[in-house]
Amino acid sequence: MYYIDLAVTGISFGCMYAMMSVGLTLVYGLLRILHVAHAAVFALGAYVTVLVANATGSILSGFVVAVIATALFGMAIYRLLYEPLLKYRPDVPLIASVGLLVLMQDAFRIVFGEQGITFQRNAFAFTTFNFAGVTVSAVQIAIVITAAVVFTGLHLFTTRTRIGIGWRATVSRPQIAASFGIDPIKVRYLNFAVGSALAAVAGGLVAEMNNLVDPGIGFVVSYKALAIIVLGGLGSVRGTLIASLVLGLVEAYGTIFIGAWLDRDAIAFLALIVLLMIRPQGFTGARTA
Amino acid sequence: MSAYEISIVSIIGINVILAVSLNMISGFCGQISLGHGAFFGAGAYAAALTMTGHGGVPLAIAAALVAGSLLGVIVGFASLRVRSDFLAVTTIGVNFLFVGFVRKQAWLGGEMGISGIPATGLGAAGNMTMILLFAAATIALSLYISRSWMGFAFRAVGEDEAAAATLGIPSGAYKLAAFGIGTALAGLAGGLYTFFTQFITVDAFDFIFSVMLMAMVVIGGIGSTWGVVVAAAGLTLLPEAIRFVNEYRLLVFGGLLVLVIRLAPGGLAAMMQSLFLAAPRR
Image 1 (spheres, rainbow over the protein chains, first blue to last red):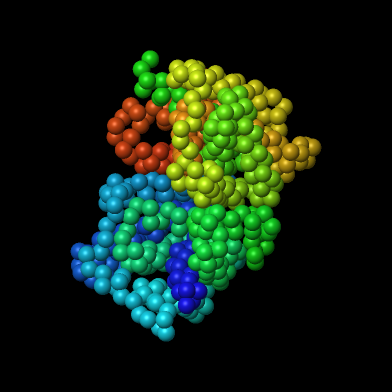
Image 2: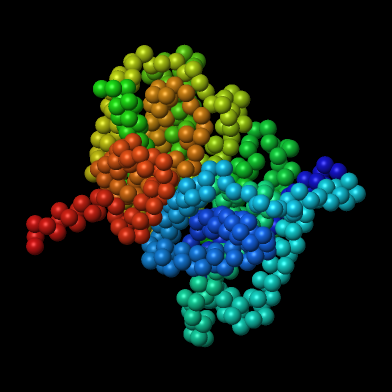
């Protein structure tokens, strides 16, 4: 049963990683920028969720406000930070992005305190169900269901709606898409809005799970998400989903097999480095990194 | 000098060595490394193990240099495979891997680090003098390399690898050389840090510290030895001089990093240059 428990942990973490990383892979696919500060957006989402949930007494409204706030914030990052830096080599926006992450993390610490903040009422966090000896928490179920809904929605949006198809067209052939009348700048804003909103949902769910938001919430996840999008083949949403689930499971089982000589959080980086050395273009991508 | 002043000057010396050595890799040769803390740490641990094993100061310094550059050349080989932002990500990974590995190693003290490292026997002022001498030597080496054929080749590789190749510059060899030299100096700084504190934990060599070093290089003006020296000294002093900055250190460093990249990508060096070049002519 222990192994099945680990599988449950792994899958729920994998779904969380997926919602977190998909924004990163979308930004990379469109702009070729490694948007590390996405983790700060994730943390912002978590903070807003808790703050609004505590103020209104409704966790759902917390998520709604967080999604709107982070979508706006993500678009502001694009407009104010990345757009003027697109003319430089790709490591310049990367360093700026790291700077922004460090800055925001410290800002969260200063404003909300080192200890972080918790939900006043969070009945969800401690509810568990027992399926034939396997313990599953309500939050884990919520994470998996949310991820399934979100990714189905994203899939339908990008395949069935005009805007979604225009988005995909811009990612794969920007010039041709533009000549068909799709405004590439609007697509960029859309991209940042959707990616940031997904990160906010993931952030809110992690806050639920831990019943806590502290300044370090986005920190390790952010670099792990970099590993995930590289493993997933850079810009590929499907690859990112698979890599997220695989990493969640490998981490869950890895803690018992290699936890003695390597930190759990370092596993993703080991995988990242090995993959980059063997296949610099990722599992599926064709671009030379 | 008071004990406090001695410790500040020592830290400035160590940070100058680190920032100048990072500038050789990222500034001269254009290979962005966000994992310089790992090489610093490798040197610190090598020196700590040598000192606790009663190897003596010269051997500890040699061990620190070798440990830093050994790890550095390995990462240098990575720079032959991946470029630009992906090299940067690889070095971030190396930094996390280094910390994650050391944390779990009993023989490296694990989470608790290594304490009770024997003193060098030079005293605090003697240590400071040694650190400053090494810092001066590092600056001199950096200035020399910058003017040498090697510096020219570094810049050629950094600006356009394909164009450098058509000039017959073996870019791989120069990238390895940049990593080898830069990380050996980072290892040296690690050894000096060990002499200075006599107590090390892996948290001192984490990714955030690497970002601080990159902030020093970018703010000073990437590629400019003197700009980087000024920024390293200034950014080390700033939290000491202003209490507000000390409490909000990461906020200030991160903010400066973003502002400089966004508004003045050339850093202090470019600002000074435009000031002095623009003034006399008009």
